[in-house]
Length: 533
Ligand code: NM2
Image 1 (cartoon, rainbow, N blue to C red):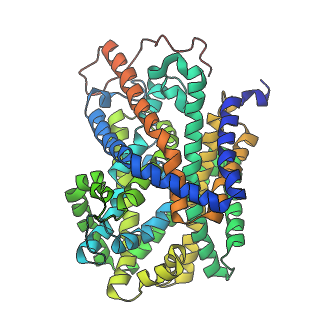
Image 2: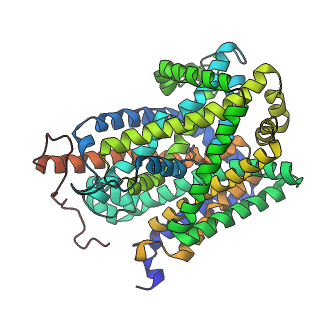
Image 3: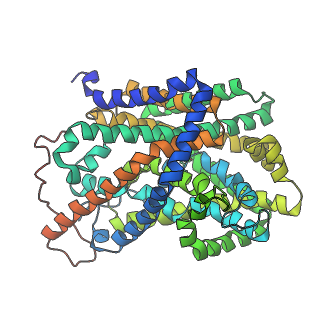
């Protein structure tokens, strides 16, 4: 087959049309564009915020239910299949796929926003606000967030290892529910929505990461911080991940992930040991307690009275929890594909519990160490983070906090390099997966090279535009708007998994054993006869 025949043109063109349809008007009418974006944001979060919140909580409940039901005992593979990766590298890969440079950004500074604008009617900068400030970050990067990531992995891993059908498209993963409709426009729409979602999420990531990296570079070299340098740095980062994506999974993506892991461990250990070790440990443990105590309140808080005039409207749920669930959501099908790929030989229960546990603990370490260091500076008065942030903005504050550490030039350099690699490792795998989804089949194990490169550069188009017109709210909107349709896809994915696995379990004789091996399944009537590999 000629290379170009491998491209799934309807999906490819569909995704491109939506992308250009959003970005071109923004380039020509930035002010009107920003207004429309803000209106879209208010409309979405105001009216559909509740859907995002319910989707988050239901994902967690659903996964716990699956993990401890018969389905949880199903092994992803046959009886002889060994675990493809040891638990440590599995957890490390999982983490570096799902987490990008944003954890450096928000891990350092998220508490400062909560400290000034806490939820639940708590007084800003009060003792209670301090407690919530060090807790809310680990909630937004905790079990619900990771449940959103894990859900799409279920049907994908199931079809891949149990039914042994290589599924690299989200549309294929919902075939048990949608049947032959997957082969028509509905299938294309699902894949296009997934691509568009990921572009929105990546837009938020890149547009947050770039100013932070630029501040780091400015601190180290004196290069001015303006839109031109920011755009230059964004293009440079894009070039790095394009090269990495071009060289493929084994070389590019793996080498960068390994370097990343060691640098991150060093940075966290350094700040923990050189910084206020006791304060950091105590605050981290205390915040876990507060999280457990307030968990359901946080998971459902929508501030309903704000809709009634005369009552206080903090805007907190919309600006934070809804935004976060949307942001995790747009990345979820992509991370699901990745988690599925590395989970061969595990049981479904191991996959679910492992992802939620290691993912949440990993995020806890980042927020606990980076965030509480800044909080300590603020509370002791040795550096007024809040005033600095209100004057110079978050990216400059992040670098200023790091500058309070000993050997700060070295630390800022490590931090900046880390942020670049973190961005690259998220984006090279994202462009790889986008290329895979917009192809009919994968020849020789990898999507076509020019195609991977194409998506690498396309991914930076939206953030580039957003950065020029945007404040934080505009960037958040990219995830919220593009995440909305994925709520429904999540529902289909969950349904699809339950439908397929229940049918197979019924046919299986080894119902009561501790681990269940599905050895055969009844093909759905809708499965294509000539299923392409
Ligand atoms: N999430 C984890 O920007 C990044 O770090 C990628 C962001 C969804 C908030 C993922």
